[in-house]
Amino acid sequence: MAIDGFFPRRRTWLAAALIVVAPWTAATEQSTWPARPITIVVPYTPGTSMDVLARVLGPRLSQKLGQPVIVENRAGASGNIGTGYVAESPPDGHTLLMTVSTFVMNPSLFKKVPYDPLASFVPVGRVAVGALVLAVHPTFPAATLPEAIDAFRSRPGRYAYSSPGNGTPQHLAMELFKMHAGVDLMHVPYSGSAGAVTDLLGGQVQAMILPANTALGLRQAGKLRVLAATQERRIPVMSDVPTLAEQGIRGADVDLWFGMLAPARTPPAVVARLNREINEILAMADIQETLSKQGLTVAPGTPEAFGTLVSAEYERWADVIRKARITAD
Image (cartoon, rainbow, N blue to C red; front, side):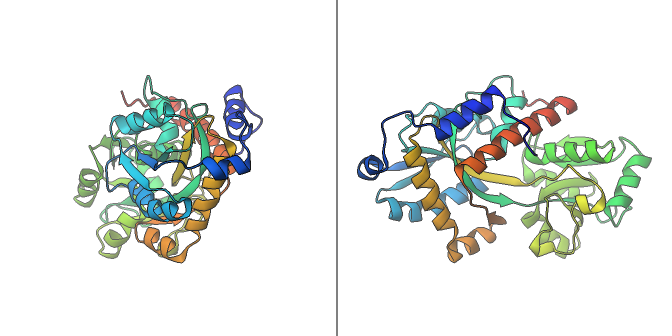
């Protein structure tokens, strides 16, 4: 995921993040912002991980900023409706976006989206990550990932994997795995996670990439077999499960990242203040404990680091989507 140079769109992104485009100073920011309630737009339905994040952070952020923080769900079109709404909002720091990895995937999946992931927003900061795992049905003839790869290769196209839908992070993560492992599996998309997991447990499909917190209890109950963690490091609650890279599949590391963004041209002083306050909230032990119960690990950082991540992920998934010929339209 290293970046070798910058394309023009990256320069646009960094310019939006770093260049002062209005006569704001730190003193001005302190005295005039926030001037009214702040809205965190979640472009998905209530109860999703990004919704939980926004509602956990909101009250603490309100205390720090001295203004109400409202969480508003604007779901639809795989997150595109709410994301487009924030992209068109005034860049004054009063309307923010809490989003997930699909933010950088959608522009390559759909023929048209109402935002540019690099030019329409300025990064505030990454907030958390959610671990994913590759699991198979207990009757699948493999106890390890290398054995599973051998089984997949022995019967190309005969085994199937489920996902919550076409173009979802779980779908793209499995396609990335397939490319690096040199295997052919049939994709069976569902209209949500419940059906995808149910049919994995029932043996109608043989494999799936799913959130670690979902897989943990099912694994403990013997209802599925977890073969690999798809992130760079082992998952603490499943420390005995090796990563993809540890088992010879390099370059396919994936996790779900969650982050906050603001409309492009939001004053840098406002972005810096938001980043500082959110990072302080994420450092609180009770916040970390609450998010851990949701299968999330806090992942604070700078706006610049989050901008670099978004740029790299945008290119990475555009390449996967193009090679796998995936569309969501």
